[in-house]
Length: 83
Image 1 (tube, rainbow, N blue to C red):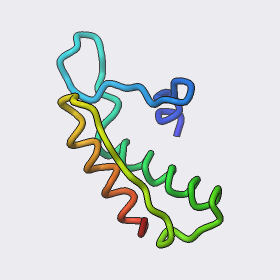
Image 2 (image 1 turned 135 degrees about the vertical axis):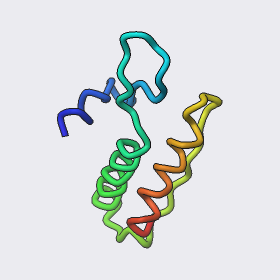
Image 3 (image 1 turned 90 degrees about the vertical axis):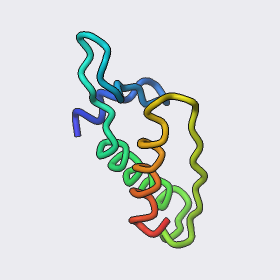
């Protein structure tokens, strides 16, 4: 859990998703993204007072090379919960 909290930067999530930056360790993997999406789903369910099946979420991305794999991980996390 502490590793996930290290990715928080104000209201954003910041991390290194791809290898290639010297001295930077990859810490924003698809598995981490999936876990964050599940945590978001739990938070949203409580916030809205709705079951997972009654929630809808839109997911977009920018043009980064990691966007597709992280988007798919987030979708898998949310749909796996029934959102």
